[in-house]
Image (cartoon, rainbow over all chains, first blue to last red; front, side, top):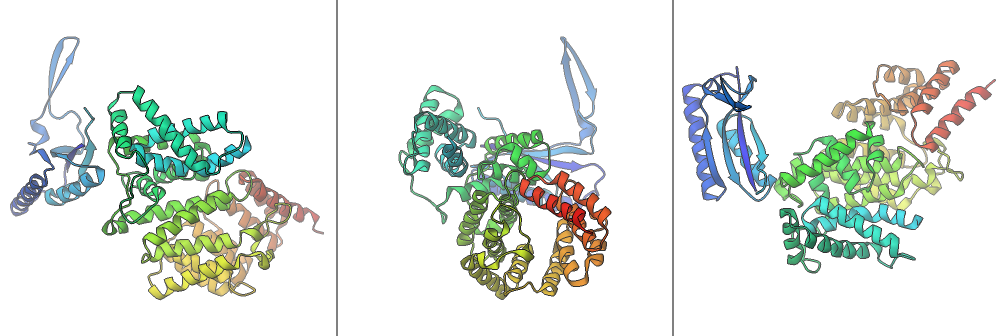
Length: 114
Length: 397
């Protein structure tokens, strides 16, 4: 099974200090290394701020683009992991480590099968 | 065939649990078991000596036939599992009980509390969605939808079918205890039909015993088992010869099951020695007081309810505590204690008020409260009991 662990940043939450930020990066690096050595790592990445997003729509052959994220919500996707593991319990155990490392809530969602 | 209906009720959960292990999918397991019961309805003159084993074997064969015709990924996966276990596979782990695996899957923390209980009652208790809905005072459509969604999540998110390891138990145990307690309760005061659904009570006790064997050092598991045993012990005295409800004070104590009471008291003493009281242990202790000697020591019951209310300040606990208040401090104090409690749709709140108002010699208000309780009571034994009490009001001079 593959799962996406989506990191949710909450808009308006207190900003991390540069030291805390460094600390979070180091912790995330350690979890990534652990995921890789366990054979669970598929892909991971942090995203730029939602303001850098562009939404593309194609309707009736016409393409329109809008500036900003798809939904103007308080919580935005800040980054994600894609992991491979046996079942939800394993995925939840990784999610716990990931949430602690990046200091944000993590949503666990299974991928559709082939 | 009435016998088959009773058998369906008794064997459905066990068969689905075993088939889920064999097929790796709850939905497929349910279909296979339903297929097997359809075959039984056609073929059986009388049930075979071990009907559960017959159902499991037939269900497995029907599942193999069905899977051969289908070519989805789930079907291929399930077929592979079946081929891995051509016969009963060797068990792994400390528990030889598919139903325990099933209960931990149904009560997985990734499912909502309502979904957990609904699913357990459906899959382990064999209740229909309508019965679950009545037990939870929510619309049937809501329950049906929760059950479907929960099964889909178990399958699509791959919630595992296993008993958790020791280090996971502190998080995984509380929802399981809640669900077992609710199953027993549904059996003890059925929301519809006759008062007691013995099958559900015994099923809850059986599952709780299996859990206690697995976790002998968890005092709340022992507490729950004691609570269920002490309640079950009084069951023979709870109804009279005509099936009518008999209150605790009027029960013939010689009908109580002494063996279960001794076992329950022993468990309560074991809990006391551990001295880590929790809600189930406190409720078990209250029941131990009720079943100790010739009459209930109400001040002790009230003291235990005070402790319980401090740990779990819910309106149901407050209502039960009020009954002890009435015995210790009189009905006026008890009536004050139930004033302001909100338990929409729960017949025992107006029933308790009606009893207290009767004792306070306020018949008009008591009658109104009985009317309300009768309208809400789902099982006919309780309704008949309340109607009898209301009639008693009219007969008074």
